[in-house]
Length: 320
Figure 1 (cartoon, helix red, strand yellow):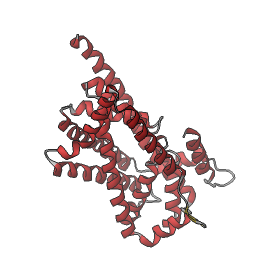
Figure 2 (cartoon, rainbow, N blue to C red):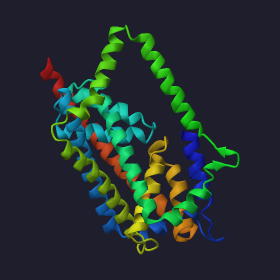
Figure 3 (tube, one colour):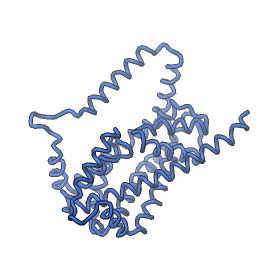
Figure 4 (cartoon, rainbow, N blue to C red):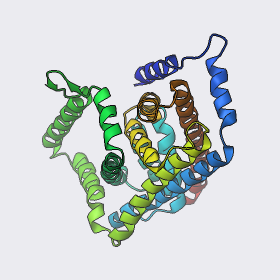
């Protein structure tokens, strides 16, 4: 995954064509200096609020399982998960559950079941978002997808990742079948199932839906503020922001550290092909946008890691 990320980042930077006397790093720094820091600050505030809302939604899912956790501990665990995801793709989903266990004694298998539910809900929201972007920019998006060669000349080409996911699913089912009589395994499976079914036991399903829509609206607002922060993109309309947000969300969903590489490949391609932005400006925009977002996640993650450590250390004498 790391090698693939490095390769995609290298290819993205390689596409940054400048004059003979221009330096790529200087060009990126110039783009950063030209950016409107007020809009970038607003993006950071909205990002923090979206994480708080996601932490609150996670608390809602955990409540029907009999695990009432505090918003602070839920938020700290979530941010640690984002930090781990930057190094280990999808590793954050497990690490945030483990951190919550250390803080609240919430069973890892149960909280992980609720995380899976969250991901299913997020996929549904993403599909709705993609549908809306297609309605807004059908002609442009159709040309963009055709250019990606998702369909081979001999028919539909099944991506390797889909084959691997299918095989992993089969192996998982076989493992459950073989180990179903083991008490420890059964406890883990039952806890995981309890977390998965928590969504059907919610007291206020409407509030859960409201939170889910709110999270994605905040994500969209983050993209809007960043696009407004750069002179090269500030004149793009609502439909363009929606389309680029959809492309960026797909790129971030790739199993790469923090979407690095996939984001730097797909989003510049969308800016160039759909909105005729010069390739150098598109690459610079994406590197700064993603870098700013990643820096924020690292900062919040490190603070959350330290805060969790102090809370756990403070709790140990009391538990004795």
